Length: 466
Ligand code: HEC
Ligand code: HEC
Ligand code: HEC
Ligand code: HEC
Image (tube, rainbow, N blue to C red; front, side, top):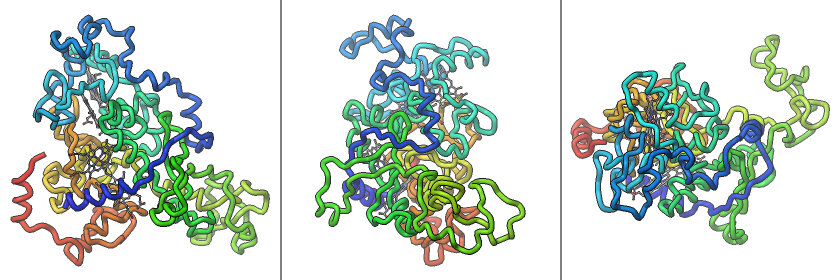
């Protein structure tokens, strides 16, 4: 099941656009503030974590990659997180169940991926002291309140964080998720490890979503060309950016392979224009309403909404489709941001992590294989004692895998606009987002994929463990 899926995605990745990413001045509303507030040091300095001035530990100062004779001193992270699983379990030479000298199976320490300060270490069990050391070691959020879940800071993914990741500092995004696409070119793609994947994934339609933007704008008459022209992509600073194909594809490539020349960020809705200006004469527009101001006197089911009689951009004389695409974030399941993390079927992280680090979403082994026993509440089963086993919004374990269950794809692919895995499961697009279950019960077993037999379930469970 997983194999046939993966071959599909590999082909897709090969076909994916190869685009380069110059910065562009077009900025969507939601990132303006993050740009102006951004106090981040230049990204070229990212390798120099921790800042050298803060390294007081002599072993750190003298440890150079060539000096094998000196046994590596454990990073301070290990003094608290010593039980955590190695992120890479499989290395080129060894397979690790537990950390080896604070490193994973490809020899990466915590701060190589996460950043943060490796010097401070836990010296007492006093909760106040632990909190103090932790704050020194961890990278601080720019918007700590928005990272709370149920009022607490537990490291769990917050609920409905929307575009929060684009507003945070590069350093913090890297700290909470080294696989996020804002940082992946430097973390996963750094040292030539997964350079190709990082480039391709950042330009994949699962990231830019151009198919849906294109269909919505063209089909509703907002934009005259059938080839997608707009897509979502964010630079390292979190600003929207244009993707440009280099070298420029030939007309033949565009026609036969569907290659695109470029994708722009979707324009701000205030400067968008209605497809047909004469729509201002449509009946029904009793009064001109301001966007976002509800009117309680409106007749139920007969909105007074109409387009403005004044100039473009005034009142509602903007393009309703652009407005809808931006304000409702109609296509929210892209790799740029976290899932909503608020109900079974939507617990996930962003970027590479969205697929390669498994979250518990589904109890049915025909969707989630052996991960089913972790439940569907996004709870953790990590050996790390710092992570709550009851809070939702954590990965099952601190471990990459290429054994990606269908349920992990389904987290995005049940959303409107991404119906591909639904059809793979033998279902049609039944309802946008059903209330209690992402797989509507009426479909399971009726023309859809039959649930696994008890024997098959036993086999699946025996064969693998996570
Ligand atoms: C290969 C890169 C990599 C390395 C090395 C690595 N991590 Fe992680 N870590 C990640 C990724 C990716 C995540 C998943 C983030 C997410 O789910 O959003 C993560 C998540 C975490 C979490 C949150 C887990 C949870 O349940 O919410 C903790 C804590 C953590 N890492 C600590 C560490 C420590 C301590 C080390 C060193 C022993 C370490 N990491 C090494 C990549 C790495
Ligand atoms: C003094 C103990 C302590 C040290 C040292 C420490 N951590 Fe943590 N860490 C915690 C605790 C406790 C949590 C659980 C969440 C919380 O309480 O903030 C946590 C959570 C995390 C998370 C989850 C995301 C988040 O924002 O909470 C990551 C990632 C993480 N630690 C990485 C690291 C890395 C990397 C280092 C070393 C640079 C490190 N930690 C050092 C105690 C520590
Ligand atoms: C949409 C889901 C998805 C995303 C996002 C994704 N991958 Fe993958 N990746 C896969 C699948 C599926 C496979 C194939 C697994 C298999 O062969 O069984 C794979 C395979 C891989 C492999 C080969 C693993 C092996 O076992 O040899 C690497 C390395 C990899 N991905 C790196 C990345 C990196 C780096 C990123 C982020 C830049 C990323 N992937 C993002 C789905 C994804
Ligand atoms: C972060 C959300 C997300 C995840 C996770 C995800 N996808 Fe996607 N995927 C998308 C989006 C967005 C598109 C864009 C096309 C669309 O709108 O249908 C897409 C498109 C695709 C397409 C192309 C569809 C077409 O019509 O050509 C395939 C195939 C696909 N995904 C397979 C997978 C598989 C397999 C997995 C799991 C390994 C997966 N996806 C995980 C968001 C996601």
